[in-house]
Picture 1: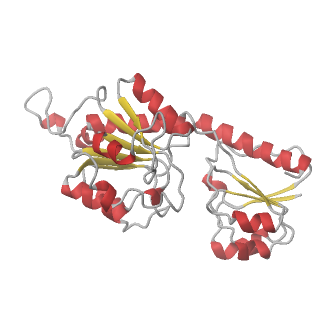
Picture 2: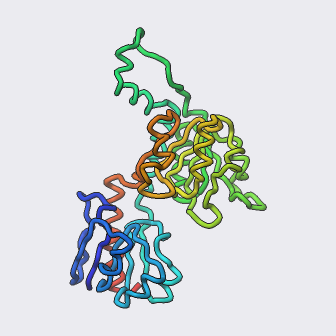
Length: 313
């Protein structure tokens, strides 16, 4: 079996994928551009990738390809219908980030509510040293306990975020689907969540129905002065509408671990705004990437390879 890993730098270098226990040839590239895919994948029996795109057109030209092993949960970069028709198995990895993503969300909640990033930024300019008193009060500090958290997406990550938030004394509301005609037990109608939540956090999958879920119209229903956290997928949020809501004061803050295009262009308006706007935090899609989560991920990738060779599935 020839295994080709197309984008190894999508994983931390100190936590590599353990080699599978069957005989194989392993070829690894740090990154692979779209015009390099065919050349590098042509002789591969197994492709390992995180974000390299495999369209129908590409897969049709790879007659030896039997397995695409994803080092991620999302499968948006692979045409799954075409893969099935072409007899190519696609295996992703789920459940590895059930601790680290909720912890990242909690960190962002505390950062937004206590302005932690702003106090830190001040010290880069020695602002405390210039204070006439033992402290100063330039940035807002509000309690996490007693706040209302609106969770959109009640899968494993959304549920764990809600569980931890409740332990902190937050009121947790799980949003029903936006266009649902009935509300399930344990859920609150979508627009009621937006109207009540002090913080809205996104944990729903990216689908045709959820793309641009947070847009000018839905943002208008947010509670004035609320905050938005997105550790899900960038295209869940209309970035132009979000920036406008931050500038107008409709939203008090936003914390984003994902953007619509990754990596973003240097002139992405949100990247530029994050340099100067005190109410915008951007982290580079790392909520999933604790050492323990990555260790679980790479071990599951190895098991996926071995299961496929053993069973063909």
